[in-house]
Length: 375
Image (cartoon, rainbow, N blue to C red; front, side, top):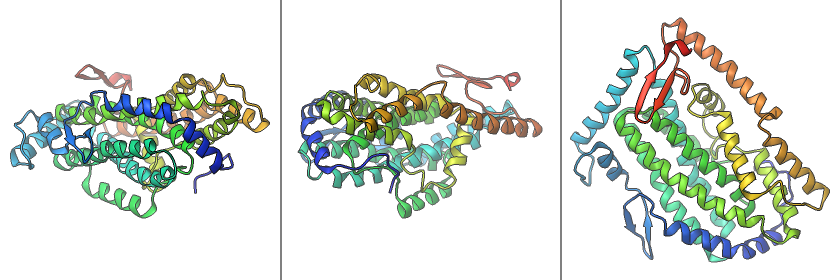
């Protein structure tokens, strides 16, 4: 059971769900009428933008599409990746462990989302249909993401297949550790999480080979759309009746206090892997904090006027957690800095240039430059 700072109130949750219906319907309609950048596949009762993993690979490799993975596709995808790793090697950068770590984490996130969706089915069952319908559409679009990244990773070598299998097995056994009993909690978690996922795919795309770049950007583009979808619903939460705001903001504070990756409790060595990713620049403490602040600002969370002492304390907690100069962010940055210093020392001792995106590895459009002296 995820940690909580609030007492769950099923009756109030039901009222919130009903009051929020017009906002949820408008957000859903906007999402469904916005071009998804993917082929449209026919579902039983509507047309939904869903990625076809094999088609994404053929498009990224600039080959004629076929319904199966052919030796020609395997060779082109694999050659592109190996050549790219070799390019870094010629510049004394051991990039493969960094890129594989990013690929594993991104796939783990996508695989965890499917379990997150499954747990939400129980939450939405007694609510108006727009929530279940939205979950179906969202799941339909999310499901191919792990497959798409997985196919690319298996073929290219960009994701270690054995470790990926171990991670998925642990996920299936242990599940996720996210609050899915509250509609408010689901929105407070999913909004920034989808934007964080977009950032992770985008960062990996920037430093990937030309084919991998297109694959990661295709998946990331859908995550960006999902973040906007949940942001629109969240904005409606803080426009509801003031008597509901105390409950909503207390749930919000709870989610922000314990925010993390959906599958982090079942992802082997998650914290160590995440900290190394931060040390190499594939995501940053500031980046994650920025997405939380964007939600707080867009929803006007610090501008509402809670009534109860508990809700006032929750709002104050949200303010502290989102202070760019606050203790929470300083503490995380200190840990990342220490890990980064050790990584730099180890790489230099081995005669290599450390891989640090934004420092020793710079990206300008599709051009990558290695700056050894920046270490």
